[in-house]
Image (cartoon, rainbow, N blue to C red):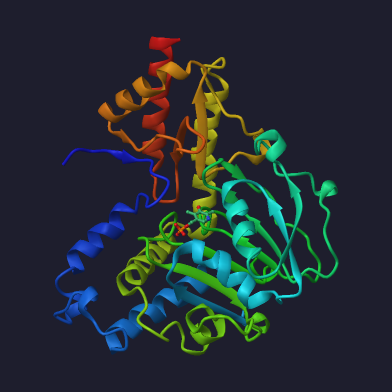
Length: 361
Ligand SMILES: *Cc1c(COP(=O)(O)O)cnc(C)c1O
């Protein structure tokens, strides 16, 4: 098998050890004689899998009592409607920070269900920064404050947790979930699609403070009501069983690697290597995002000579460096270096980029 490093933004690289375990357990999970995909979600085997996954996630993130962990479907995109339907009144409004593509989509969807006040936007700078806190126009009676901790497409990461007092803080953490330490008690609700940093697509993790449950708008479909899922321990209907199993293996893998703290140190190192190389390339490569806000998960960069971008991508591929093309809406390059990307992959990319700049600079 060819050795490649996969820099896809999502679905994305999974830990090699996790895939090897899944392979070994594929035909016979723990002596059950069944593949996890074939199990009843209410059987004792799967109940053990989902229970362990939740407990391991709670331990990793030190999730306090008083928070529910939900394993849902529909992707992070479904949360764009589920959050306002459950947490905001029809005749009320929410505050949202606009940092790029995903926060804009969250705004667009929320407007269908409640009023939306955009507290600040960095669209003027093409999202090179997170808007200065001093410029935020918050409203005192907002049902919640929503932000996107990491803009996967723009490569912009919020380096701090917004201080919003008693207003419930809601975060789309899809692309930096489990990548750095987070104090869950500061949040009313955190959501994340699994396919960036957790596991396969088809699973969305929601962590929600219990007092926020049970206030859904009357029009809310049953399947979009958090309380329905919370009361049923994510078993109201059939959950995404196999993705939950893989996510559970990823949580166990994280525990063997020093937990989130260990991951954060590695992620800092990986991103540091890549941005350092970009910044010392005399402009051959450049990042439009200002240094304090550069994403440690999705390193977005361009070549000074745009005509070289296709050559860069095809040469990279020949060197086993896959899926480096930027999102179609922004162009350029994007190296997604989630938890499961080993530092060797980042070093291989850095070497390749240095060579490429030498040849074409
Ligand atoms: C990928 C992504 C989404 C959308 O996720 P889906 O699971 O495809 O709905 C939303 N927000 C962020 C920050 C993302 O990275």
